[in-house]
Each structure stands twice: as C-alpha cells, then as structure tokens.
Image (cartoon, rainbow, N blue to C red; front, top):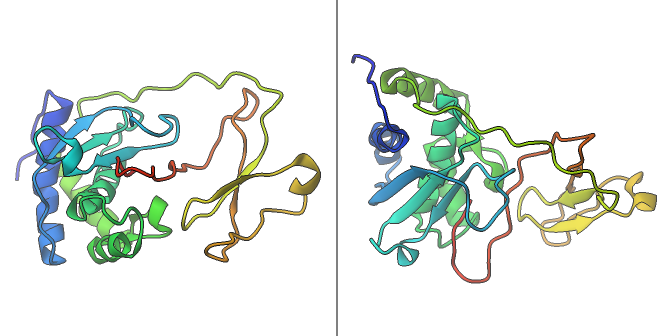
Length: 215
C-alpha cells in the first residue's frame, strides 16, 4: 500500500485507529466508536501524561474521546500510546488500570505495569509497519520550558501498579523507596522537577473518585 499524506493531525489519528482495528479484532475485541484528537490531558499533568481516554458518558456524542499529547510526534510512540488508550475505550474506562484493562492490554500486545503499559517487541514491529503506511504525522512536538526552580521540591515514590504516591523526606530518602501497602511492591522513586534536573519518569495521575478520563 502506498504511503498516505495527511495534512491534519486528527485525520492521521483517525486513520491510525482503522489500522489498529485488526489487532484488536484478532484479540477478540471490537474498538467502539471513538474520537481521537491531539490535546493535553484535562485532569492530570501535561508534562507527564501522554494520552487520555474519556468514558462515553462524559461525551456529548456518547463516544470515547481520546487525546494524544502534543509532546509526541514520533509515529511509533504515538501508535503505542493510542493502543493503550484504545484499551481503555474497549473497557469504557470502567476498570481504570485494573484487571479487565490488564487482560485487554496483554492480549493486544502491551506489557509492563498497567499504568505504563507499552507495546511488546512483536507489537512494536507491527506499529512500525503501520506507521510507514500512515506516512508522516503532521505535527512537531511541543517542548516544555524547564520547570521553575523550587527549594521545596521533594523526592516522591509511586507504586508502578496502583499509582499510590508518597513524599520522601530527605533524611529517609537514602534508605530507598518504601513498599506499597496495597500491592506489596517496591515503589519507584521519581526525581522532583527542578530547573537543575528536568528528567522524570512518565507517571500518570491517580484515578478521580468520579468516573473521568483515564490516562
């Protein structure tokens, strides 16, 4: 198939959904009606969240609304994030990053902790092929300015499974991250955002009490 040329980001993303449909159908899932746009998340940090899916009940059109961060412009990374968000759409965001989401994600080819699930090696190859057929993504990534310096920045640790987060006091930080009280897993220490240190693990926001968007 010849490479396509898209002039609008949303056109590229909507076409990408059609290319991903066989991956989901082979796994036994149907992608529901969705709208995919380029945009920052509404309920979590735009610096760290790469994608977000809203449940149908929050859409005036009664469809799952998916937003892909303007931070992304590399096609395979875009498709990887889109697959993650489409898994939420299949579940209509009901399970968050719980067992139902994990089952869908693993079946279509995602691996790793649910909140940060990424394409496995085989799926990456498939996404590379799809990206070649889709052609260039008509967008250049937005680059955030360095965070403002802060003397009050503290290290935090987050559970890779449930997202439970704690602040690490400086005098205890040298002992390492604690164990999550819910999942009994070693939590992952995140370096605070300062102007001297801007590298940060891509963590997603906690799920709101009210059913809202899932990243």
